[in-house]
Amino acid sequence: MSVLVYVENAEGKFKKSIFEAVSYAKSVAAQLDTSLIAISIGNVAQDELAKLAKYGANKTLNVNTEQLKTFVNQAYASVIAEAAKKENAEVVVLSNSFSGKGLAPRIGVKLEAAVISGAIELPDTTGGQFKVKRSAFSNKAFATVEATSKVKVISLTPNAYQVIEKAGEGNIEDFNAPVDQQDLKAVIKEVVRATDKVSLPDAELVVSAGRGLKGPENWGMIEELASLLGAATACSKPVSDADWRPHSEHVGQTGIAISPNLYIAIGISGAIQHLAGVSSSKVIVVINKDPEAPFFKVADYGIVGDAFEIVPKLIEAVKSL
Ligand code: FAD
Image (cartoon, rainbow, N blue to C red):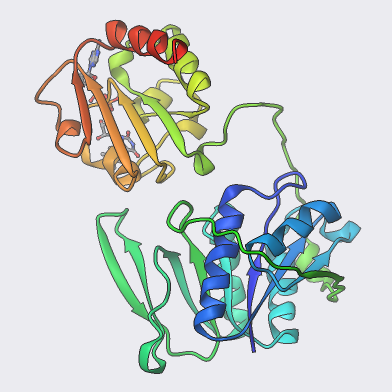
């Protein structure tokens, strides 16, 4: 028996959300008194793979073939399911990322496993049960799901579990699972944008702005504050609908759901659909000139004032630190 964790890479590197998934999977393995196996697919250097041992991987299966160089949902799901069978995995853990959301149900079908998506806590395994808390209805509720199948697939919400470093060693093995040509029928066209900006889904700090900013020409100060803090930028839906900002920055019910450690909302009213994607942020700071803005009800810190006066002052304050 074992626990298997899929470690997706972004251009050959593992993001923080992957170390969270490995730490979470290690804790599950400890609960079940078994070992943790990681599986990496794609071109990842040995020194990057070696990092996984620090978070508890006892062994890493490395699938680095030409066919699987870029992400192909069906093929990746088949390879992960084969690895799970080979390692007799009782639990398969993934990050609930874009690719994780697509992979988890496919792996579940292949392994006849229950799938728990968006887990936010470790399983409760007392008395032989297997119950996991997950967020539901765009973070407005929690559901505790009991999995009764022999094998379970869990996708972990990014930023819901801490990264835990452990002193340990693990070996790296090549794994060559046979790939069904049917699984490789889809043509993958990957568009990689050269940017040094922090990626929004993984960001620990987010500076977000809404219609209160009046127009795209005023985002300079938002970019500057974000860059000084090492934060990602985000926006409300009307802002991306109006093409002031790219759709990839739109957070909320119909956009990306994020849970950073700090979310700074500037000139955003705090409509329920916006809050649905950001309310699980650890600390929320709201800057709005309207003291009645609904966002203040969920804010940890609020500044009532004009963004065009407050944000430049914040920038100066951060620069002077
Ligand atoms: P506004 O509501 O116009 O608010 C602007 C705010 O800026 C106001 O509170 C105002 O007081 C403040 N302000 C103005 N000037 C200043 C200034 N100088 N300084 C400081 N503050 C200032 N919205 C999302 O964001 N994400 C979603 O995913 C989403 N999904 C939706 C799905 C559905 C089905 C529907 C119906 C709506 C959805 N919406 C979503 C839209 C949502 O209902 C709101 O309309 C939207 O969030 C409002 O955006 P806003 O706060 O930027 O703009």
